[in-house]
Image (cartoon, rainbow, N blue to C red; front, top):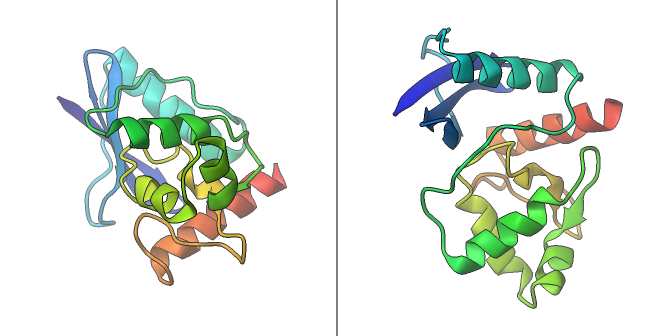
Amino acid sequence: MDQIIVKTPIGKIAVDYQDGFVIEVHQVADRVRASSKKDPFAVEIQKQFTAYFSGDLKEFNLPFLFKQGTDYQLKVWDQIRKISFGNTKTYGEIAKKIKSGPRAVGNACRRNQLLLLVPCHRVVSVSGLGGFMGDDTGKLVQRKQWLLDHEQMQ
């Protein structure tokens, strides 16, 4: 497995990849040094993340694999991938599509290992922003708000 660290406006993001597939995208501590690998797939990853954060890319086109996830989680993530750039859906709207409950959808979002590629930041609570990556009030929720604002401005 290889990894590239991308510096972004919401902090550093690690993208783990193997055999031409992204297998995990997650935040890392700011003290982790950004990397610049030269293999073609790493270059494409860097290019797409840079384009997304500069407002030039609305949909990632990177092949990925889920390294884990239940059938239910895969169903939720599939619905979330259908939410287009700049739009949101509530946990309840996703739940209704798959005949489930909003809390279960939120739990699946919390387990998402492909940050931005499966855009869980586009899933909000009926009464407001909702949580992000298991956080309900802190820095991670601020990142969710930043991502939503970024997409609305484009």
